[in-house]
Length: 141
Image 1 (cartoon, rainbow, N blue to C red):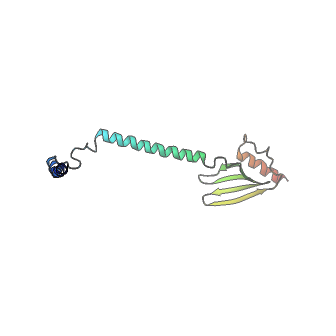
Image 2: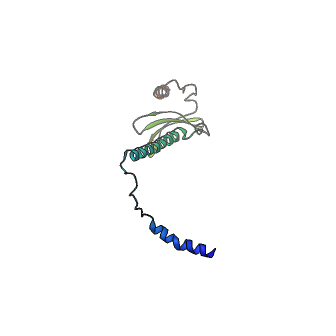
Image 3: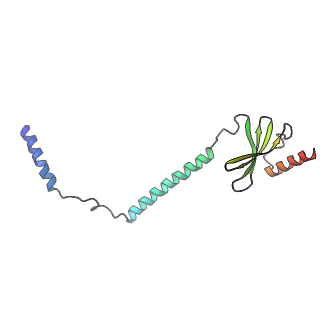
């Protein structure tokens, strides 16, 4: 048994030296071949598709179920520009009209209890029409 083991150990280096040396890249496929480019393109498209799907899901599910929890509720809002919004929020029994811009939130007006009825803020009308009708009611008083 010892003789067999020593023979294998002595023959192994000669077997390794007898094999043809392989240099890296000598037998590889051309990196700019059609098959390689197709494989890379399909992989890139798959990764981009996954990124788009994750971004869409994050946008759709952000704040999922949080709109009705607590004493604050966003009643409606309107875009005033590319980055500015006017938002009507119910906080307890008061309504706040807020101006929202990147890095800044400004209280534009506070409506007291009873100034805005829940039946007045129906989703069928636009925010602008509702705001104008509420402001005209306030001015008439």
